[in-house]
Image 1 (tube, rainbow, N blue to C red):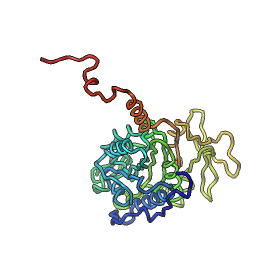
Image 2: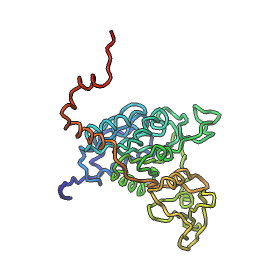
Image 3: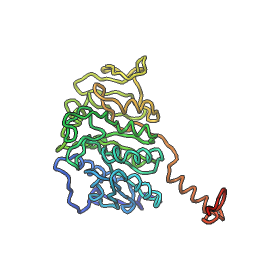
Image 4: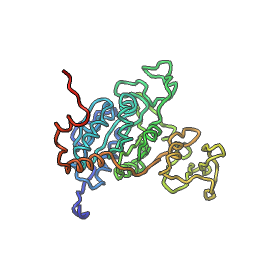
Amino acid sequence: MSNTEDQPQYSKKDFMSDQMIRWCPGCGDYSILSQVQTVFASLNIPKEDFAVISGIGCSSRFPYYMNTYGFHTIHGRAPAFATGLKLANPNLSVWMITGDGDSLSIGGNHFIHILRRNVDIQLLLFNNRIYGLTKGQYSPTSEVGKKTKSTPMGSLDHPFEPCAVALGADGTFIARTVDIFVKDQREVLAQAADHRGTSFVEIFQNCNIFNDGAFTNVTDRKVRGEAVIFVKHGEPLTFGGKDQPRKGLRLNKRIQLEVVEIGDEPPGDDILVHDETNPVLANLLARMRPPFPVAMGILFRVERPTYDAGVHEQLEVASKVPSAGDLTKALYSGNTWVVE
C-alpha cells in the first residue's frame, strides 16, 4: 500500500464474530481473544487477508469467534493446514491457535517441523497445563505429581517446557506472555505479527474449571514483582517488587544463572543484558522456574529464510525451465526398469 491513507482503519469490533462464545465463564481464553482482536485491528492489514487456523481443544474454537477467514481442523494437524494455506496464498496473514495438548501430544511432530521449516505464520499456544475440553486429564505440560482424572495418584511424566521445545526445533521467534498481562500480551503479539517466519508465542492461560490457579505463582499481584522478569533486548535482566530490593541475573563460575540483589544501584557489569539473538541465553531464560523468576517477553528472535518464500522461489525457477512440466520425461529419466 502506498500510504497510510490507503490502509484500512479497523476497530476491535470489526474482528468480533456474531457467534456465541462457548467457553466457561472466567476462562482465560476470553482475554486472549480480546487482545488478538485488538491487535488485528492495529496491523493495517485488510480483514480479508487474515486466516485463523486451529486444531482441537478449547482454544481451537477460536476461528468461530474471529470475523476473519478460518478453519477448525483436526487434532494436532493444524500446522499442516496452516503450511498449505500459506503456500497457496503467501499474501495471507496466517494465525494458528493451539493448546498444550493439541500441539505437544498428538501434534508434537507437526509442531516441531513447522518451527524448523520457518513457515511465515504466527503460532499461539495456549498453555493451561490440562486437557480442558475432555474434562481434566493431565497434559504434556502438567507438572510431576499432578492429580487428575487420568492420574489419580499423580502424574509420573516429566513435563515439556514449550519455549525450550521451540528453541530445540530451531524456531526463529520465541516469546511468552500471560492471559491477564494485557499490555505485555498485545506488545508480544504485535511483534510476532511483524516477524517473518514462524512466530511462536506461549500464553499462560488459566482453566478455572479443571486447573484453576495454575499460574498464580506469576499472576498474583502480591508476588508478581518477585516472580516475573520482563525481558527486553539490550536491557539488563533485573526484576523486583515495589517493597522488595531490586535483583538481577548473572552467571556464576559454573555458567549457571543466579539471582543477586542490586538494590537501588545501577546494574553492575556482572548483570546479564538480554540479547534476543543468543539461543543459549534464551534456553536459560525459557527454563527458569521458582525460586527464579519466570521470563516473559521475547526470549529469542533471529532472521532466517522462510520455507514458503523458498518454495515460491523454486517454483519461479522451475517455471522458466522448458521441460519442467514434462511429467513423462521426469518419470522415465535416469535409472528405470521394466517388470515383465
